[in-house]
Image (cartoon, rainbow, N blue to C red):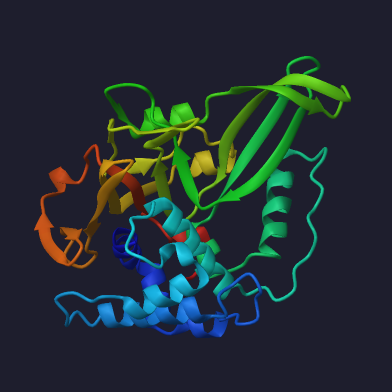
Length: 328
């Protein structure tokens, strides 16, 4: 929990949204999917206190108690998966801050060209989910299923919070190799083809259609095979600046933008599946220095040590907010 919260505190647009009190106009206390606005209120109080910078450390006991009242799995001190916590927490914030009060039904995308189907799916999604979390952290996948018998292709566009990347089975890889593995076509047996009207073998391809201003990358270090669980300790090299997401981008307009991202946080996991410890590395926007957050201990660190085989969650910020058409 601590490592994720530290990284999110360095997500400047989100932190400023709370410290400036802009979240209050979006509070949705009647959303049955949310936490009655209480999670957003407690997180705001935590952010404001931490930004006073007058504490050696701060124990977020009220925030943790509020979180546990809606999610009992976070009640004790047992270690939880950082990605699962981040996903639950950001989903909870989203529902507490959802600007939508009345939701509409899903739309039909059959037979539409890619760009029209993607825009319609995204706009329809925003009629049900519209918050600062969607504005900052959510992108859009393009999923294509192609029948290997008749060639018919069925498209689906869906939102994502984390860009979850598999790690290739090599001693050392870079982030681009993970992206290439992510977009590799997968054979699916028994898919019901809408054209053939029966079960067929198909090829499934996942690609990126829309990227968010703040990109969270989840490196799949934990693998499951039946009752067995394992952790991959492969070193994944990733850039601290000028990350370009090009492999797996299906949207021609996004390819033309050549968007660059800069790293501002890393949640690292040390240990194995049965136990371990999370430590955060974060870059301070003002000093431009990197810091190591190990529970209550905070210390400066050289940026040469930011990339390691313990990296689990990567937090990137788009270098240029101007062309995104949003004001945060």
